[in-house]
Image 1 (spheres, rainbow, N blue to C red):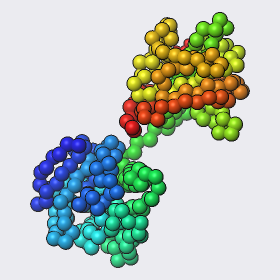
Image 2 (image 1 turned 90 degrees about the vertical axis):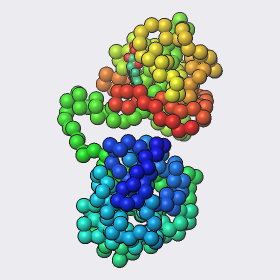
Image 3 (image 1 turned 90 degrees about the horizontal axis):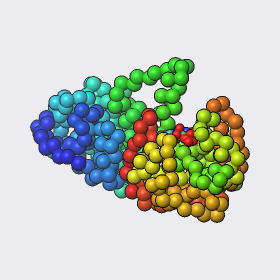
Image 4 (image 1 turned 135 degrees about the horizontal axis):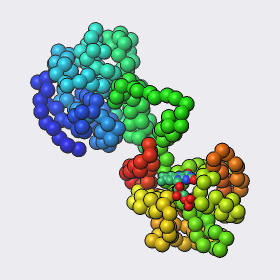
Length: 327
Ligand SMILES: Cc1cc2nc3c(=O)[nH]c(=O)nc-3n(C[C@H](O)[C@H](O)[C@H](O)COP(=O)(O)O)c2cc1C
């Protein structure tokens, strides 16, 4: 996080993220706003928000001070405050509220408490008029911060989108490809053996789980693949999910050449190649092959699976490799 400590509207502010991104103004103190404020600020920044934390004290500072702060910001922010600050925040946003802020996120009184907040009171609602409001519900699940971040980011995407929405529509192949590219995937290498018992494989992102009982997975193989007959004949195959460091492997298995030369692999029960360093591997018996347009949908029954829980995945989105760190 990069600190930019200027004063705006007479208040000290700290900020994180790219100043070009839409502002989320936190009316401090941050510890009262989130279960884990550092993690939530990181999540907001990663989602393309410029987070500005104002040292605004609802007891000492008044609605006029807040209005001044809002008008001096370079763009209209999404606002987040604690429920207890509402008696000052709501009057500051009344009447011209939507002109000063795009939306309001209200955190419950006690960031750790599982109690309903009074933020939705009729009095406050009438002051906030048409301003979109999201009241954070504290989730007691396995990862409350994750649930809270997801809800806040979903609300911000709806009411304070990063860019003006610019949908493109059409029935042409380019639009179809680009629309399909909006579905982010992992990257796999699918492998089997050729008629001579030699390993073959290719990069595929069309992997999907199908069924848990029985355990079925699928991938789609282009009919134009040099390996199409091998997979059609194969009684077994394997799917290897690549980790964040295996982009070169993905490249090798998408190009022609000796693909197995520089990659460590092993065999399990059926002899098909299992990439030794993969994030996860599934050894499968071919269950069904469905002819589908210019691809085959190859469905496999998983006979053995292995995964490494501490590694991050290699991702593919809009025709590019992407990296996200989770662990
Ligand atoms: C990220 C990525 C995903 C791919 N996904 C698939 C896929 O799901 N199915 C497929 O048939 N080809 C897919 N390809 C293309 C093949 O990997 C590529 O055409 C390869 O050269 C095919 O090799 P082959 O003709 O030797 O089988 C993908 C390529 C990349 C880079």
